[in-house]
Amino acid sequence: MLKNYFIVAVRNFWRNKVFSFINILGLSIGICTSLAIFLIVSYDLSFDHFHKDTNRIYRVVSSLKSMGEESPGPGVTINLPGAITRELTGVNAVVPLYTWDKYPDITVDAGISKVVVFKKQKNIVFTNADYFKVFNYTWLTGSPQASLSKPYQVVLTQSAARLYFPQLLYTQVTGRQLVIDTTTVTVSGIVKDITQNTDLTFTAFLSQPSLTKILFKGEDLWDDNEPSSQVFVKLSPGTTPARLTANINALYARHYKPATGNNVSLSFALQPLGDLHFNAGYGNYFNNHLAHKPTLWALLAVAAFILLLACINFINLATAQASKRAKEIGLRKTMGGSKKQLVFQFLSETFLLTLMAALLSVILIPFLLKLFSGFIPRGVTFNIVKQPGILIFLFTLVTAVSLLSGFYPAVILSSCKPVLVLKNSSGNMGKSRFAWMRRFLIVTQFVIAQVFIIATIIVCRQINYSVNSNLGFKKDGIIYFNTYFSRNQAQRQVLLQKIR
Image 1 (cartoon, rainbow, N blue to C red):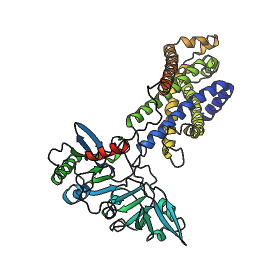
Image 2: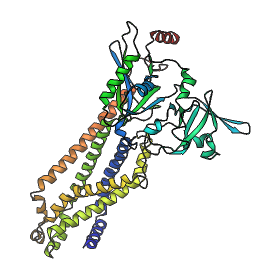
Image 3: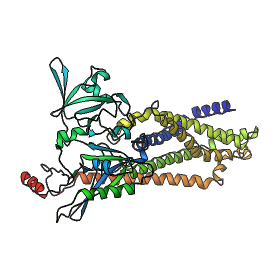
Image 4: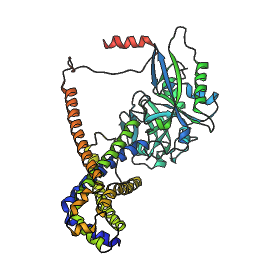
C-alpha cells in the first residue's frame, strides 16, 4: 500500500512539474528561514548552560547612585571577594576575576636567542583555584589546587599553549616562562578549551596572589569599584540570592565608611549566570556578543509566521488543483477506495513534497548564513553531524508542516463525489462547505503580501531619510567616547582640561 502511494505521488509530481516546483520552492524558503532563525535562537540560548549547578552560580554586580542618577555595572571593589570568603556563610565558592584595562603583550623565549612577541593579548584574567571548581574545565597538566596558589603562576588553555609554544607537548609547556607586560610568570597547568558556547572566553589565568604583586602592591581598596574587578559566587544549597545580597551589602557597609558630605552610595546585587549573555546593562567580557531575549522570542514568532504563510500558499495551490484530480479521485472511490485511504494518500504526497523542500533548505542554508553573515552572530554554524538538534528540529518541522498544509487539501480532495465526476460536474467541488475556508485563505495571503510590500517601502524610505537627512552640523572630526564613573571629581576636571 505504501509503495503504491509513493508511486502515485511520484507520477503526480512528474505530471505537474511546475505546480510541484512552486510548492517545493515556497516550502523550502519557509523552512530555510525557520531553520536559520532556529540556529540563531538555539545558539544564543545555549550559553553557559553546560556548567554543573548553573542555577546556583551568580555574578555580584553593583549599582552606583550619585546626584540622583543610578549607574549599574559589573564591577566590585577589589577587597570584596576576599571579605566574602572570610566573613560570609552560605557560599560554596568565591571566584574573583580581574582583567587588565590594557591588553598586555606576551613575550615568549622560543629558544636559540629567538624571542616572539604576541601583541595585545586580551583574554587574560587574574583568578583563584575556585574558578575551576565553579566552571567546568578538563585539566591536561597541573591541578586546580596547586596551579594558582602562588604568585606569578599562570594556567593556559590548550589553544593558548599551542599558540605560545607550538613545538612543545603540553607536559613540556608546564614550567616554561612567559613575560606578560613586564612580569615574568611560570606556566603551572594547561586546561582543555571549552567547546560549548560560553561568555567566559579567557585563555590565560593568572593566580590571584599575583594581582597584589603586579598591580596593586597590597593597597586597601574599599572605596573604588571598576568593571575590571568582578566576582562570581556559587551558593550553598538552601541559600537564597536575596539573603546573600543582603549579607554582601551589610559586609560592605561594615568595611567602608564614606566621608562626610559624600552623597555617593554603592549597593550590590546578584546576577544569575544565565543572564550574563543577555543583560547589556552589565555586559560580559571583552565586548563579546550579547543577545536580547525579547528579540529572540520575536524571531521565533517571525519564523512561525513565515511557515504559516508558506503553508497557506501550499493549501491555496493544492485546492486550486482539485478539479484536475477529480477523475482520479472519482475512479478510486468507484473502485472501492475509502475517504480515509484518500486522505492518507494526499497527506503522504504532502509529506514527500515537504521532505524535498527540507532537503533543498539544507542545501540552501549555508549560503543563506554566509549571505547574512553581517547580521548573524559569528558562532552560528550549520553542521548536522555535530548538531543533532538540527535533525530533531527538521523532523518536527517536516511533520508539523505536512499535517498543517496537507490536511485541509486532503479533506477537500477526498470529499469529491463519484457521481458528480461521472457527470463531469467536478467544478461543484468549489461549492462545498469548505469553500469559505479557501476564500478566506486566499484573501489572507493577498492581504499579508500587500502589508509586507507597504512595510518594505516605508522602512526603505525611513532608512534613506536617516542616512541622507541634513543634521544641521558637519559630522567630520566629531568623536564620542565614554568613561567609567569615578568618585574623584578632580580627575574628571583634569580630563576635561587635558582635552581642551
